[in-house]
Length: 263
Image 1: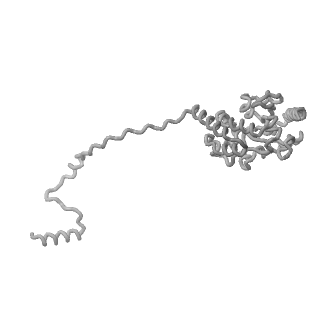
Image 2: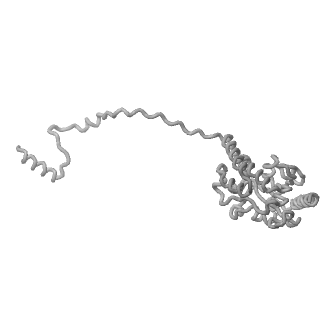
Image 3: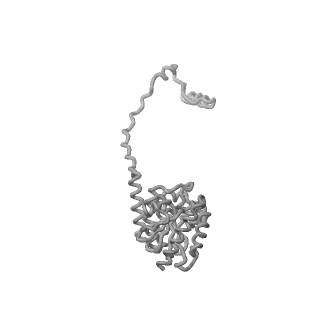
């Protein structure tokens, strides 16, 4: 068969749909299935990189406190402290909160109140004590002639919390959260420069006094960060236990007497 004839026959088979050439001898396909193809030797695997070493919970807490101290040491004004707090990235509560709740009232007021943590209303508005408990607090302060909106430092109050971000489901702050916020709280008190500090509830007592048990602590003057301190029931507790309002009134009268004596 000459070249041109063979070429013509091949083209005709291609037009018919032939896609491969068939050998002259038959192939035993079942035998091929039993023959395992040889695989090329894989290249030596690179040594796995070591996983990153994460700090332990204790080390993470120490790092957070150290960073908080670094940020607060450079804060010379309340505005700078607010910015430093906003830049703090170690507290996971920040991720779930709507707003940073910094403070309300008059800086330089003779009385400063330290609460526990923002609730739902505070998280929405970005101000401390604005819900039902805050409304009760305003009435309590008004009964002894104090108000957060009063421009007179002698009749004003300044209010903040231990935690600036709302805990999920309003749970109590954890000890590590309190520890990392404490440098900010102490610096906040120093910059606000009150004469009297009122601790509202167990968490603020735990932060500033290292003790809990507000029923035992309330009504007795103590000291923290160089200031006279009065522990009191939190207004939210008073809403749940109206019978304790009498004790809260006694504590308010003690604060009023202290202001008049020292004024």
